[in-house]
Length: 93
Image (tube, rainbow, N blue to C red):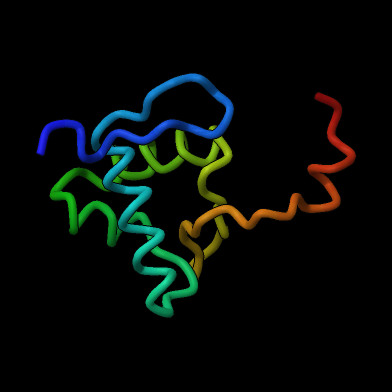
């Protein structure tokens, strides 16, 4: 199953790393099954990586616009909604 985790990022023209693809698929699946957010500690446990590395990889997906983050104690990552927030609509490009 070579390349199963690779996905095209939206409009970026870059491929995700296999781990980023797996993280994206995992977050999408968990949220589709009813989870509101997926904490980075859960990502670290599932993929057997450090918590810091899980945050780093998820942050890259946030910067690519594929995930959004909910900060705080009850926070985590979720798939990006299709509608931009009012702050994003007013942000210069």
